[in-house]
Amino acid sequence: MFDKGRPKKHDGQAEELRVTDRRRINLNNEESEASTETEAPSLKPSYVEELEARTRAEEKQVQDVQRRFDQLRQELQRETDETRQRLNRAADERAAADKARLIASLLPVMDNLERAVEAATTSGATRESLLEGVRSTATSFQNALLAAGVEPMESVGQDFNPESHEAVDTAEAEPEMDGKVIGEYSRGFKLGDRLLRPARVKVGRTTRARNATE
Image (tube, rainbow, N blue to C red; front, side):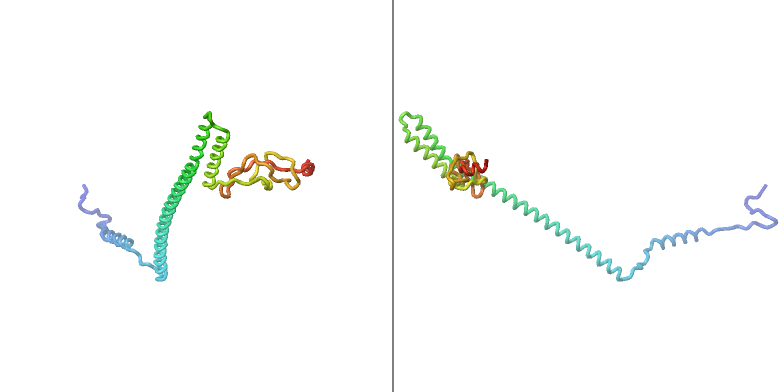
């Protein structure tokens, strides 16, 4: 039997024992790991570091300016919206007031019409009384239109203008009235510079102008 506690002999000599000191290897590994974790010293020149620091400061300043600009823009947008709303409300109130004034000015016209109808239904009504009632109603209506800024346009004797006149008919006229309005079927009206309704007119034409056209 072999003796397990003793080293085997080869050629009469005891086999050499080899022992590895693993503690030293672990220490070397720990030192290498510690060296890798330690931050390496900066190799950048000082002026490069100064430029980087200045760049970071300027970027922060730009961000602050942008943030302030966004705040001012939001405030301006809010003020603009509030101003627009106030103007719209004021315009609506003004339009409602103008509408109320126009309706109030037309109420006397309705009163006169009702009185004219009542007078026409009575047996003692005369032609003169009915005519006077109609004239009073027309006057009230004209006054209401004038109060609202509506003005009638003069057409008879004026040169025909397709922008303000609607030619309904033509008629033989003297040479000096050729191309002029010689009759009016319905009056034209304007509100300030705005045309509300063109006048429906009759235009004069001479025989010579008619033959040249034909």
